[in-house]
Image (cartoon, rainbow, N blue to C red; front, side, top):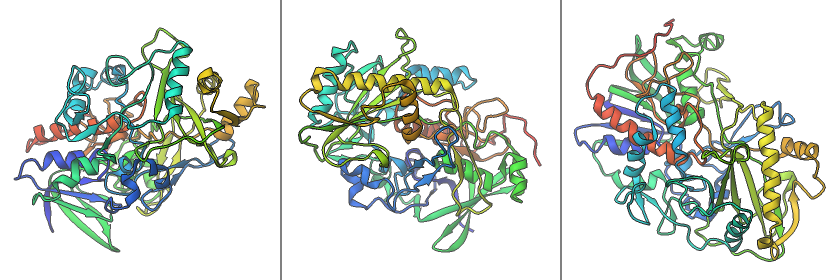
Length: 519
């Protein structure tokens, strides 16, 4: 059986980073397994084409179960099925989050994850167009650039928000996150700069790196509680490969917990119900699912709006705190784009623009569980959006602010009919009804293998899975709480930090840090 020092499962936003950093040592061998294919689809690389990637053959195209607080609707939740993972199909926004996000992670019992601890890893990745300063760096592998030729309505959003008293913020990744501006993007020379483009494609020549696409991991292999390899399906044939150091699971917040459970790590009762032998009874696997629930306030435009090929659609952003204006942590993020982007029942053709208020720190939590013991079956996903009344109130307020922005004089020459919620939806109850019909995921899936030391955590602060040896989870699933804003940049940071943790561990035997029941 072939053996590698490390096996990385998932060539997504974190997996590409880990594979790159581990193979910097020419003596270290790495197998990178990716269920999707190479990133050769032309639309991947043209920023304005990203909506056409959603639901395509490079998207897992997951759906949730009927959502009890959203009129029983099933929410569509895209995930990249291609080299680069979701960084190859997302809106390319580079948003690190709020410094207090990471200080909170540390306060939960995760030393080494404060803002001061993670800032060097954000900077390590970054090749900042504006140059280096206290918050930014140059020379990294990931291009972070200003938008090129933003649409006129995105500029008008800034004008409208400033007129309403919000400050202009030219750098959401700097000293302060509040305010309105044009977020920076991962675009290089007019093309998407995914983690595949930034971290993987330039190193495919390394002889110590093996990349296998179309490889669906079916289970992890154990000897006792030591991870010794991976079984995967490739071209209809099952293969097994051994590891002599560690397996790094970077399959994302839906598929990382899925593979753990398929391999016998998870809630013992759930696993036994599917006749899966239990390796570790770890009830937190698949719990703590978080995302940013959002709604859309859309308008037809009275004239054409020119959109450049470099437009990432989510061109402008406003961060506010409606509950505590003195807080430095926003509770709402408004995405803004120069197109009509709504649920299908509200769709209209022609030019338009859309505000998308999104809850930055929702109270509601969801879960991921197994549908069957087959790796080919999609997981059972429950977002559980708006279980909390507090979350509903934040979105109601978000719609009201979006309408105020839309009716500012800055939009007078462009504002046409309100497509969604529609001019008749004026009462709070009518807005509630619209939210239940139109609330959607922001595609920021995190939290299902959360980092911590409590009995509901899945990995320790070094991202080692509790109760087993030789296994780490390195992706957005390890976030104990969701970051403030788009989650791709934090996931890349997690990959950078994890690579250093893995290198530091070297050949030192690893010890589990949480006592768990071993079945």
